[in-house]
Length: 279
Image (cartoon, rainbow, N blue to C red; front, side, top):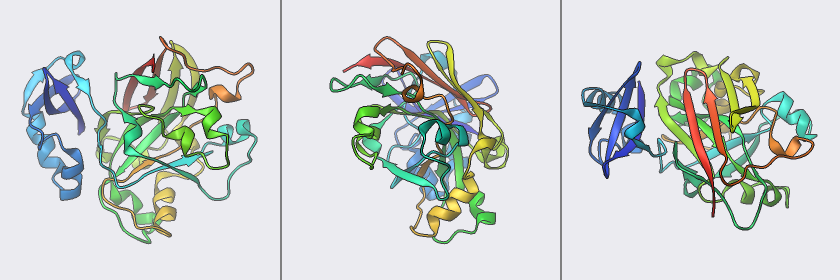
């Protein structure tokens, strides 16, 4: 299934995409993917959306797939080429930082360039949404805890990020965590969403191009390692890191500016598009 929280004509609904056909069923409760994931009713919700009215996908306004995750855990330096371009070495353990739900924005919604900085950078990433949590989850069982996958642009304010060894500030500006458009259930993808092409384009120019098989810590390994020290919960979001090609590592450096359009595409998962708008 491919499910998205959307609005159309001022009404919120749950959209389902099957091939090129998009259908929608309306209702705040139906569109509450956080609640369906927690209750284990995602399939039933998807069936209602699939039986809904056909719509033109272009007419929909997309919201982030989930909006109340207990945790958004992000991995840094999780592609070898990005770790190398950052000059920080290949990590032996996952490099972790947190995003908060207040930073999320949806497909086709603007990523905001804040007044306080010009250093807005892109990061194409795979997002994983957990169906069930747990503690000390075995790596062999970890993928059974995944509700679905989506596309994420971990847009970063680099000067704020790099002011201190902790990256939290630069990763949590409002309307910088672009997320969506669809939550894609695991049956639609290879195990762990491995081996899928991932690409970022700025104004049509390819800035990042890799595949998810290049992750240093796979989805299953990440779930296992995170659960070894904290209890994971239903609806938690894991953002799996970005490949090489970010703007801060280029010579000269490249930043997103007002009027740009940033696209992140992951094979078989989806295309996330966001205009850049000044605060």
